[in-house]
Image (cartoon, rainbow, N blue to C red; front, side, top):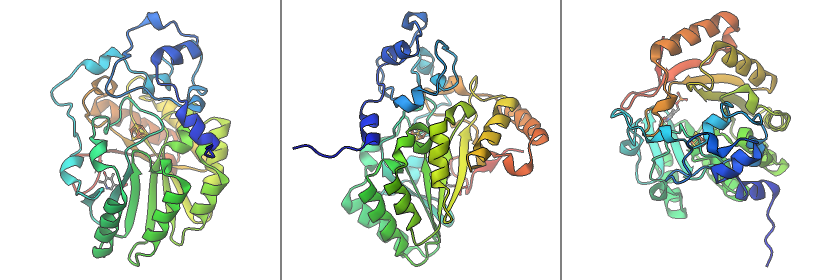
Length: 327
Ligand SMILES: *Cc1c(COP(=O)(O)O)cnc(C)c1O
Ligand code: SF4
């Protein structure tokens, strides 16, 4: 029996999973440094993302986001498994209800890429994997809470759901009268643009309630022609496109790099939303920059960009009622 597998699923299945293979592809001598080949948070890099990297450059800002390195083993005490208190907020039905008016809905544990700085890198996904029963419970929770006006599909990456699952879920959500918006937090338009198929666009276009898509792009080099084409296709009358980034040492902790990112995002039809300080997840300490430095970079950014292209500098603090603005 041959199942029909679309291109994006094939690309996903054949993503780089061994550092040696990726380094070979990039013409980098894998002896040159100490990467980790054994790791409980495996490497995963789709080809289209690897194609945005510069050949022969170990300090490429995209490669640095995905290559497991020995620095991950250093474990300062304040870097924890659940840095933002998601586990304590997670109800048994894949819903995280921390903020007023909106809930996170964990639709899948999977991602197309494994970002080394991810705050969910130590998250027990298996326990929150959505199934039909949990989905029904989650929908019931939203239905029973008329204060919830927005559902944020998150994960993992919600666009890894099949078109059918996604459509089904969005239709069910749309029938909840007090829901005003569906938000989708996804890195797929950036790291696996092949996912943005015409079928997906028509599902999103047909949503009875407005959609906000928040992409996750950290560097202008991630915006290839293919990615820009995918983002432009997402730009529909009922869809608002925003982006969030994470401030990462040695990758984008620089005013010019962030200025260029904002300019290129705008050219792709996306407005910058948040610039996050790193969440202190275990294994990510080497990506951290100080809050003082972050603020300096951000202030300089305000001097070189129009206000609408300056993302809000925020951090997430467990127990707070919203993201904390850094000013
Ligand atoms: C970040 C986050 C949101 C969304 O916050 P906004 O400020 O609306 O973007 C919602 N719920 C949880 C649990 C979050 O972590
Ligand atoms: S795509 Fe997002 S959720 Fe997935 S590993 Fe990267 S940062 Fe984490």
